[in-house]
Length: 98
Image (tube, rainbow, N blue to C red; front, side, top):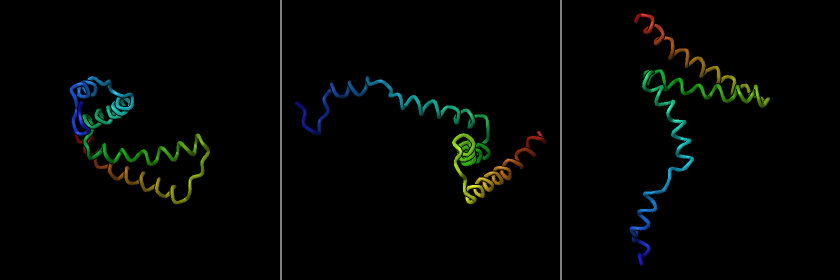
């Protein structure tokens, strides 16, 4: 009989043959689009575009759930959009030259 600090062969086999949990499948599914983006878009563009979530979530809550957005949040949304435009503009020029 194993003590508290020993692991038997039966315990090891149980852990090794355990199926992948639904949460692991879910997060793998969510991560795959990000890996696809990273494969085809430079990181210097892809990472700033991940901040679009700070715009889409409040706007979708405002549209679909009729939540109020404070003036401070509107200013934050505007700053994020300005930042995205500043980051995206030089790369659009580079693509035009190609």
